[in-house]
Length: 623
Ligand code: GCU
Image (cartoon, rainbow, N blue to C red):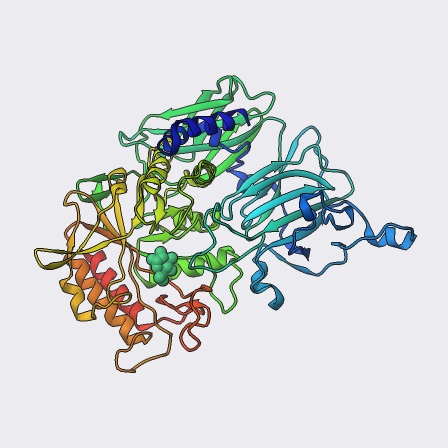
């Protein structure tokens, strides 16, 4: 609290201009969550996925009563009570909830897909799951939530153990002292509502998806444990990294890392439990790339604890107008993707088979080597599959369209959300770019906000590139219609990226697209982070009208011809692989709540444009 008050006082003293400085100056350590448990997939865990009971709470009376009074105990959903037994005893007490006898739904997954009456529910829902835990024998236990959209209020056996804001990043709460032998009651209040100070704010072009949308696991560790460990390949060929121990024996501990078949190293933790690795360039290292996604089994050991990971080693850099992967220029043949599984009623439940089905279409259907995981951090499952299958990744947090740019608390949220995403994914070879925003209108406060985010990325992870999906300006230059980037944020980026929809939004005809003139910096790599057109799968041959497959296919042909005339173009991620749900898209014939810019329908039916892009990428790959 003291640090945060200092930050706020500093921000108030310096006013808006100081906000970015104060935030950027704020210690990176402040943004580091108390616990990460990044290597938990290799740990002793208990998966709490399954049927959870739930109770709607539209007026949030389980949290607080009218006039801000404390919630009435008869409505406090998280209480550790056997309501039926108490009722059987009679007496004056009564209750207006009972999660033991409530309806149930599958967790993980959004409630909007679970029940027709919850399809457009946007507010607070309480969930409950009972579970047996193992004796700890001096060890420790944590709950790791992979994601809860949007706010989480977590109680164990009637005791509040923590809260979290942000719908797409993991959080870890220690439950060592709250667990009990014989049986535990886990209650989670999930509030999906957004407002002008959330990230994102209320209006987005994707659906609500409220709920515990990713797995929840009970993670067991020794008293002193490895909280985080990471390695990366440096430009000089050495392998560097760090390991963090937490617990009573964290200081001055010998730690070791073994990269199977390649190298071993050891180090000693400092007083804070941090050890640094610096490994000489190993002979015979096979670098990771989309064509050869070589992953190494890595084992970290320290203080009697050990965790494992699978790491790919590669370098990424920019040089003039080129993006260099392992020192060689690469063209990013990509596509954009929302986190939504194939099917008519997606619950944003990204299981490995669901993620594999999507990434398979990208890698093998489209001949792509790159995916823009928009507009928020996707599931860890997807990132690990991108590592395994060989897809480069653009990652972003949902600083999208409009944000309360001048609000220090909102900036803090964005920086913390970035940190949670970067700490989770900085070990993934596939991630090569962190984006700091999407289509945000240029203003001084907005550019300061994004600049602080860019500084934050570079402080947290100097090994990757920084980008942002910028809006373009259309203007007349010497009487010619020119599309230009006119955004002061560009100076803070390693890779320029723009969303452009000429031929769909606006009055450009498709025939005009190949001749469109661009005015962009000549010495910087540029990515077309979005372009696209709607098409209803199966709506065909209606004279090249919008929403037909023919129009979308011709839009792609003409836009790709425009792209071929852009000398600094280093990649693209057209919008979008698959039709996705959006409450903004309500044409009763063509849309019905779906954004139809997918190259595939929501059930995976390929549209004509899919083949146009696949052929284009096949040609690119051959060069
Ligand atoms: C924007 C935005 C997307 C949106 C797309 C569209 O570029 O970034 O989130 O879905 O346009 O209009 O379909």
